[in-house]
Amino acid sequence: MAGNSGNAIDPIHQFQITNISSPIVIGGFDFSFTNASLFMVVTVVVATLFLVLSTNRRGLVPGRAQLMAEMSYEFVAATLRGSAGNEGMRFFPLVFSLFMFVFVANMLGMFPYFFTVTSQIIVTFALAILVIGTVTIYGFFKHGAGFLKLFVPSGVPALVVPLVSAIEVISFLSRPVSLSVRLFANMLAGHITLKVFAGFVVMLTGFGAAGIASAILPLVLTVAITALEFLVAFLQAYVFTVLTCMYLADALHPSH
Amino acid sequence: MSNTQGNLNTTAEIGIVEDGGSFPPFDSTTYPSQLLWLVLSFGVFYWVMSKVVLPRIGGILEDRRDRIAGDMAEASRLKQETDEAIASYESALAEARKKATTMAHNARSKVKAETESARAVAEEQLAAKLSESEQSIARITAESLSHVGEIAAETTGELVKALIGGRAPAKAEVAKAVDAALK
Image: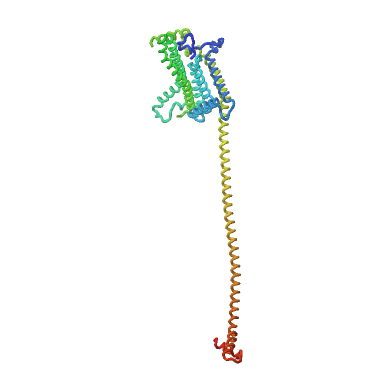
């Protein structure tokens, strides 16, 4: 929802990445600290500060903030345990970090003029690769070649095994794509929609009384879509987490 | 609508042209920077989560679970103690009741025995007195009866004396006659 006030109805501008430090170029690559970098750091700082400060008292009877921290812990733990079992709890720090990072990044993106970290395909793709990389490396590390059983479902007639395996391989390879594109596209589309409808309101109010009257509908829609986007911000973080848990379950139990 | 859309598209295109010619999320020149800062920030976040935050929250939840389990165990221990106390109280009560019944029974039977013996003694005494009385009555009766002849003889002597006058007949003679008459 970041925007350039001078160009209020450019729905793409909010995704623009700009340097906010002197350029850092190493080996021909630009590693400058940008607004995207800033909001990654802000996401981490906000999430960490909340979790650390809220649990600082270690209250036996939790306060509101501590209860929220505990609820997020138990929510992610229940999700992970539900799909990957107790063995899956070894990945709990990873899954919890992913959930909190994506969730806080999505929520911060709902503030006007804030940059949405998860609206960048490279970020969501990197997170998806982290998940699939963990699944693959852990799967081979734990089961060796047995991990390949993931692609050969049991109980399938020998005749159709090549076909099924091909489908399984394709579905496995498409996981990082679907995982990353789902989050990226949801955040991108939501923020563009919001910007476009909010832009209508600004534009229409410029056309006098009739314009202001007709701006009511897009205004209502903007409010409604804002509410929807808060839901999507949580839901996409949750979906990302659930899928991560399911993929991790594959790494633990490849023969399904 | 189409007009607005057109305006929007134009503005958007101008924006894109201004911003370097491509849709920002697909601008690969920003990727190295994003990847580096993502790795750094997420790496730090992961480290803090796994080393500080998650052990801490896990510890808090664990402590609470332990505390609740401990309190429950303590409560059930106290309940058991209470139950035991109630049971021992009840058994003591039952014992006391039994003892009281026994004591009452003993006392009653003792009193009964005493009464019985006292009555026996009294009856014995009464019986003794009775037999004594009977004996004395019998003795008196016998005595009286033994005097009857004497009195009859005396009376007869007097009667004879009064009837026939003169001197009274000999005592032995009168007694003989009376004895004969009495027989």
